[in-house]
Amino acid sequence: MSVTVRIPTTLRPVSGGISTVSVNGSTVRDVLQGLEKVHPGFAAKLLDDQGNLHKFVNVFVADDDVRYLKGLDTEVSGGQTVSIVPAVAGGR
Image (tube, rainbow, N blue to C red; front, top):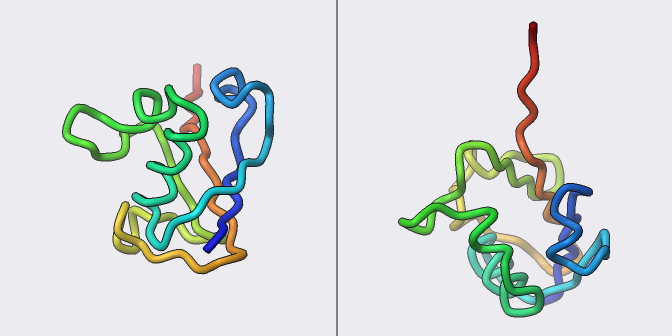
């Protein structure tokens, strides 16, 4: 089943400048693996050495943060959108 992945501006060099990519997958893990196959280099930007999301990377299925669902094992359905959102830190 095809899922749309929204690529943030900071990661678009990895996707060749493309803002959305369609990949197949039934879980967020599958989707990210599919993204890595289509555009190598995403795994290093998104996942740590143990294969978990970096602390500074947020992934949403629709409007839900996967950290509060089943993490990388969160199910996705065909036609859904997965958004990658780098954490933003700020302050004085």
